[in-house]
Structure formats: C-alpha cells, structure tokens
Length: 421
Image (cartoon, rainbow, N blue to C red; front, side, top):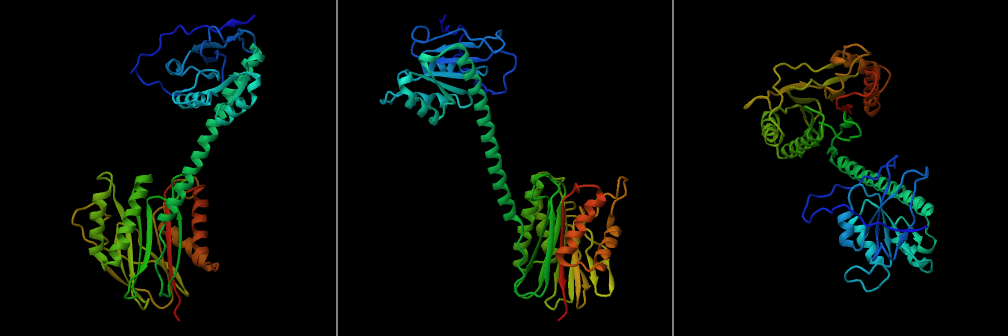
C-alpha cells in the first residue's frame, strides 16, 4: 500500500558552510541508493510506495524537498538521483507553467546528479521535452509503483554516469587535438629558399603521447647565402623543458636572422636560458653550424653537445674532429664558445643529432650504442644505399630495436646534404 514520502530528518548544512564536493556517480554497490524528491507537497500530494532493491532487502532511501532552496541544501554527495515533480511552481521569472524552467534550474544546481521528472500521463509531450532539456528519463504519476521507480532510478544513475564519461572523453579528445595542433605549429619550418642544400629531419619525443620534447632544431638561410643550422637539447623530459626548447629555437632563429653567430649568438642564448628556465639546475647543450654560400666550408660551435657526423662519397662517415668545445648553456657564467672552421668539400652529408640517439641500450645489458656504434650503424645504412629521410628513419628505427623498445630520451636528427654540380 502506498505510503507518504518521509521528510528528510537530517539537519541541512548551514548557509555559508563548507562547499559540498561533487557527487561521484559510481556504479551502485550493495549500499542503498538515495533519491531526492522535489515537489510542492511531497508528504501529502505525492506518495511513493516503499521501494526495495532487486534482492528485496536494500531500501532506496528517500529525501524530500518542497522547493529548490531546500533541494540545494539536501544535494549532498550521497544523493544519487533527483525526482522532480513538474507540477512544482516555476522558477522565478518563468510564467510558462510547464515546469521546464524549474527543471533547468535543477540541472544547474545538480549538474552531476541523475534527474528524473514526474508528470501526469496526459503531459507526455512535456515529459519528452524534459528529456530533451536534460533529464535522464520521465515517469507518469498514475503508473508509479516501487518496481518501476527502482528500475528507473538505477537506469538514470547509469545513464548519467555514461553521459559524464562520454563528455569527459570528448573533452579529452578535443584537448588532445588542440595540443597536437599547437605542438605541430611549434615544430620548425626550414628557411632554405635559394639554397642547393637538401634538408631532412626526424623528431621523436621521449614523453608518452607528446609531440614535443626538450630537443629542438632549426635551419635558416640568411641574405648573404650562408645556411645556418642548429640542434639542441634541454636537460629533462617534461613540458617545461619542451617549452624552453621552443623558446631557445625561436630566439636562435631571431638572433641568426639579425646577424649574430658563433660566440656572440651563444652568449645571448645563454642569457635567454637563464631568464626563462624554471630553476637554476636546467641547462641546454647546443651544436651550431654556419655553411658558407659556396657550400664547401662551415663554422662549427659546440656547447656541450656531441660532434656532428660527416659522410663523403667513397669514404666512410666519421665524426668531425672538435677540441676545446665550450660548456653547455646555463652552466658557467661568462663562458666562451670557440668557433672551428671545417672543410666540407664538394659533395657531402652532415648529420647533427641529440644524445637520445646514442644513449639507447644495446640488448638487455648496460652497454649503450654510443657514438662509435652510431657511426658504424650509419655506415651500414649508407652502404645499403640509404640517404636523406630514409637514412634517418632507418637509423632511429634501428636504435629503438637495439634498445628493445621505445627510446626513453627525446631524439632529434637533422641531415643537410650537398651534391656538387
């Protein structure tokens, strides 16, 4: 026999009290569900039968509120579902009398709760409109019984939980797409118009699902015909290091186009690093080359970075000899970076790389690929006829294979090539 909905006996939270944490719509366990009924006179006009769970033992606990102000106080985290009687007088400023303005207010104050609406069978159109507005389901007052209400509550809770999960997934995908577009936009576009040099690059961040890491590179041609190329590595693998790498790359391009090179450029970059780095322990290694307009000579500066590799026709690839290189940027104040002149010849390929390529392990032991292993690997690929993009792709792929899986450090490789005409 139907019994009146009991009034909530709990003392409501005082005005201005601590904020109520958001409700968590986890799948119901053995504990009872709690239903908040909102109606003008739930103890008199609205009656609901005693509700038992499917096993016939666990009751669905009922709370009731006569208006939205009282409902807001009773919306504690343990409330799983709200049942709104659409006959409740409309929200302030609503003269339609259809109850939908009240429903919208309920959805506003209970964005993470499942919501059911209760109306007369003659108001089927209004009930359907309520679902369109945001309710999980509707019930007809004349057909209400305990079994139907119990099933409707559980359905509404599960549907709301699914809706929230779907929303979070869509939000996550949108954020990932925006981040991907941003990171792709931060990758450099080489400025080589008018040069006979060919450019290739490979970039693989060490962070999972990231597009940018702490490695950075760039290549530009200045109006005098000199081609300037750079590759660098900020210590660390997080988003702060990736952001700092982008800042250093952009600063390098601006300073290079402004006419700086060699020690003057690196000194200014160190000042940028010191201002922008999140802590004093952060440093960056750098390798810069400026290739003469005739393509036969280059100036080389190293700031704690491994030396480039050069290959020429008929000769095995080798590391460029370099002594007295300067320290990494950010380690020593007022440091100097000597510039060494390098003879390239007529036809050549110059490969710059970060240490992520050479620090991968070989098999399950502690031995690493190292520079000697890299040179051997490159020569093997050159003997197989690889060049340009295919050479870089094969080298990075083999380094991963030798490591037994994904390389943990960021990897950047840049290849500049010239064929004598």
